[in-house]
Length: 109
Image (cartoon, rainbow, N blue to C red; front, side, top):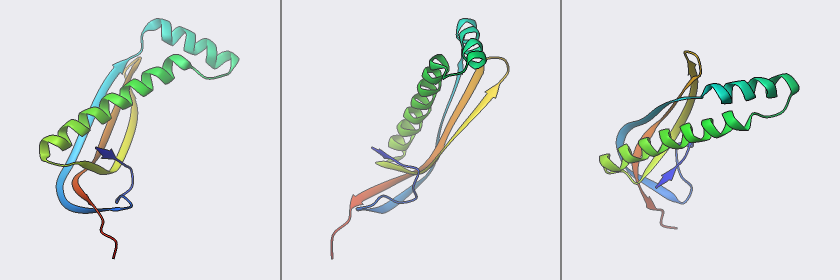
């Protein structure tokens, strides 16, 4: 399944629209990750612990959205928007939304 932030897919024609699909996930980062991330923030650099959590959350939200698109009969999702929010202490929410569509290879004229 093609997932894209663009409203169309080069080389394909959208033949059907199935509606908005979403995926959400809330992940908590544990106290040790918080501790080491705060040290990284003080001395500089990237926090690999938080980057890993962000990647996992994004992958989960996209997979949930893809599953919903398949259930609607789509074979692609266009116009995807990803949002990240922190809620409460140490909780991260990632939401993905887009439009489930049916696509077919474009014929060249």
